[in-house]
Length: 134
Image (cartoon, rainbow, N blue to C red; front, side, top):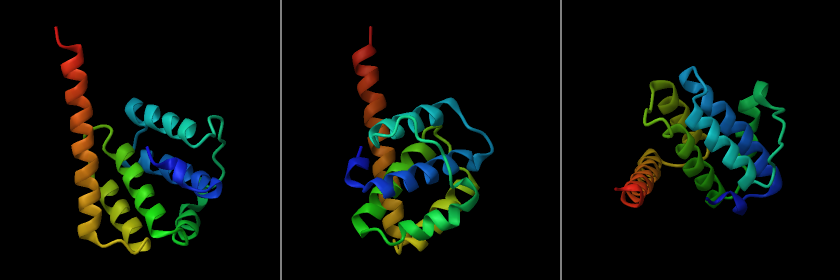
């Protein structure tokens, strides 16, 4: 939704982070794969090849240098993939808290971002149910 605001380098690092985030619950679910694919298109990199999965801490370190607005964008978009399966497991929670701390984003602000994404997801689902209703 907001990925076009990121620089090309930030988009590449975001995709690395997003893919890593998908696997935090132990599986790569279809909903997550679909969202990741939409991320690659939104980033203008539909055939992006992952290169930094072995150095996610390095990716995070690079992204900590981004503007605070861009760090918030990254968190919002990651919540989109983390919450895609309507489950928010312990490892995902810990990772998002770790990322927020690295990005110098307070926990209360992280929770606000999460609630906003959840609300947007609810609205999208409600819209589909209104449209598809018999």
